[in-house]
Length: 113
Length: 109
Image (cartoon, rainbow over all chains, first blue to last red; front, side, top):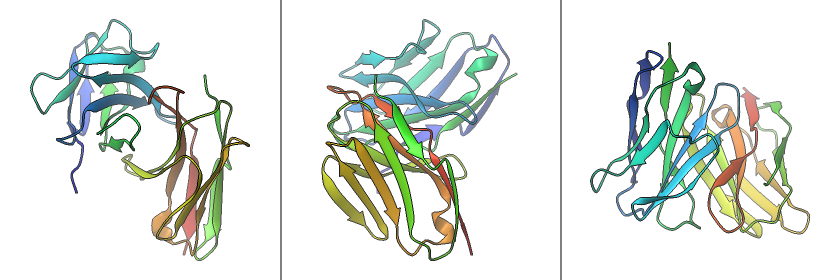
């Protein structure tokens, strides 16, 4: 069965550094999402992306965050200048239509030192 | 904004027991999602339902739209069912998901 894949599985970065989290959504999917889960807390929506543009973003998704679909397969989340509070598990998800179940990747655990 | 509440937060049961996890939400929705989060952190979609009941193997999900309530049941529970079960609802009119806090289920052999 097709899967959403995320790389790396674990990223350790110094505070203030830029980080790029990568996702390969399922190939025929059109809607893409990033979520994050701070340790011990619930999963939170960050951003949704459709037709090469952001369709919705949360208050968390400030100017330090950006998303891109640089080619036909990858979907990336960039954090420009990381803070300690960016430490979390980041999940990518995709679906074929917005009213269909979302398929999640296994997540990237981001640790900011 | 939709508020999503789950109960219980933690549940420990013996293998074979019938399990029920509850989810309630505050604003009318188009569909509700049940997700499973493995100990390693990965998330798997179990069900998406907008009315009535769905069954997949030993898992059953029900929803009552009028009461804004859904339940996830596991029959003949097994240690491999141990995970965090999360309900999530879309904001009305779009598919941004709002998540509950999850129910940590532990099944003891």
